[in-house]
Amino acid sequence: MAALKKALFILVLGVTAAAAAEFPARKAGLWILSVKSPAGRTVSMQECVDAKTDAALQSMSGGMAQRACSKRDIQRSGNTITIDSVCTIAGRTRTARAVITGSFDSAYTMVITSQGEGAPPTSTTMTAKWTGPCAAGQKPGDVIMGNGFKMNIFEMQKGTGRPAVPVPPSR
Image (cartoon, rainbow, N blue to C red; front, top):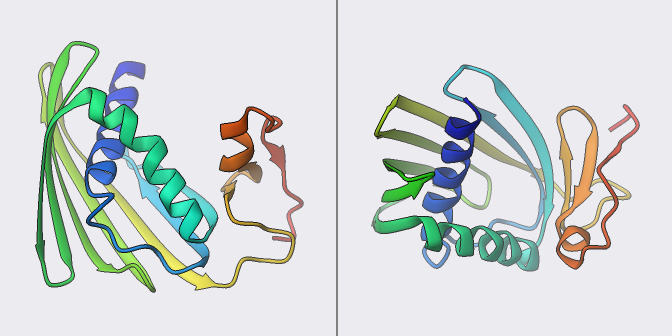
């Protein structure tokens, strides 16, 4: 099961990183993301972003995806981006299709379907909604998980970030 989770994570990175040049930058401010896994579990998080944050997130995921994914075909039609990928994780090949609809200024949905060797087909849905400026005390790069743990991607990149810390419930 851990290998499947890792494979899904890399596929998500692969399809999103594949379109880094194709994605419009998200509107600066606070985004609420919700990811529904193939098992039906939902993980929510808040991301405080600006142009630098989006570029950093795409850069982080891009290297891993380039090593694991041999194909990334991107098509655009109106407000829909479709990305077809083929990635090899732990020696097994999986294909994925991501369909992203909506606006990077207000709200978008990404549905990723994948299938591959020795694993059942899966579907993951991510929804993202812009809610306004980042909250007081938040800075670009802050990610607050649904369980209250907070991290900053820039501090983690530098290796100076402390382990995630709980955020007081009054978010």
